[in-house]
Image (cartoon, rainbow, N blue to C red):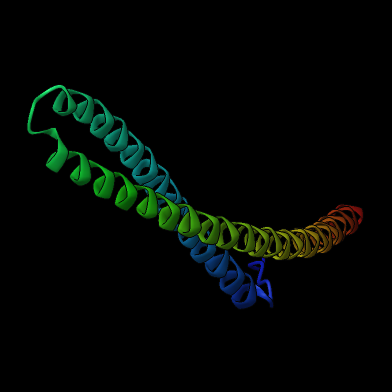
Length: 148
């Protein structure tokens, strides 16, 4: 029996490679997305801790100098959060774009896989037909030999 040879195997491998590469890139984007969310959460906790510390400091007599520090600290953290939220939005847009690219690449691979399966089925059908013809020839030759 002859070996099945898909003529577009190179293209299929290339598309599968592209799909894998897009999956890896999407994974990296998800990692950045999660890291940015964690950073925002951490910054919000730091602000809460600063407010708590500010309340403690304001209870003491030398609180005026420290009150300004907390105000600057909290403003800085809030600006940092705005920056992180902006980065988060940008990363989410990248994620959506990459997810769309991955969906398209997966579709292309699926089409190629279906085409490969169709060609394989045709190849198998043709081979089965050839094998059946050989068997029939063999049976006919045997019958002819016994008839002599």
